[in-house]
Image 1 (spheres, one colour):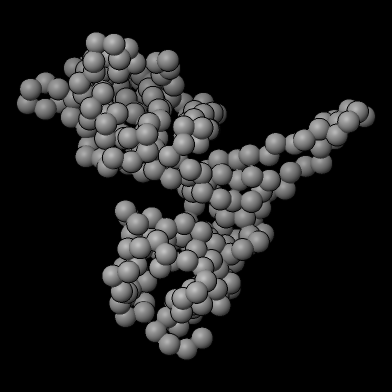
Image 2: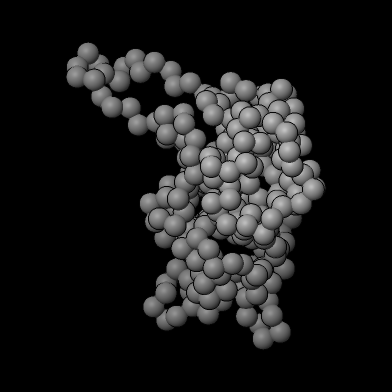
Length: 258
């Protein structure tokens, strides 16, 4: 392919030759490659996988746009037919799909049972520390009004004490943290308990760090696709996956506040 977007084709083709099946780039990185991008990149349809000259640049290299993050001005390309890496990895060799073993024992000689094969991948992004303002109220890092998951890590000031982690989900990160947890209402029992917990730890000199996840991947029968975090079911699935992962891999205490 000749023309303005040929440098992007070369860049992606080189990545494919290295076996990368998933590439995430910022709009600025792409603009630097091709000598600038039009204002219309802020519209999701600009990144459609057909009908535009720019689409040929990634399709020619064997990729398609798998997800666009307009708020963060980033785009993720994936090679069709290749399983994408987990959200905690930037790249992964080709043929990276994990095969499901034969379902021996699932049918037990009776009628065939339907196998539900679901996997979730997400990446925690550090958002900053939770502190107290001049009035003694909880002060959370600035967040957008978007759905997602949040993780509060409470590092005790007592030597040798285990860290504690609370993981939750919400349809609006800013409202949940800077609203409910900062100013809990009299009937918001969970918010009241978290507010008290954070105040107690800060009073003891503990450090409290916030991390968030505003996007996630779901693998259905090995095929990756974005997990819709605007839906409660999607957020609960991601929340429980994060809790299971924390229990299995972290030495921290998982706080369950109901």
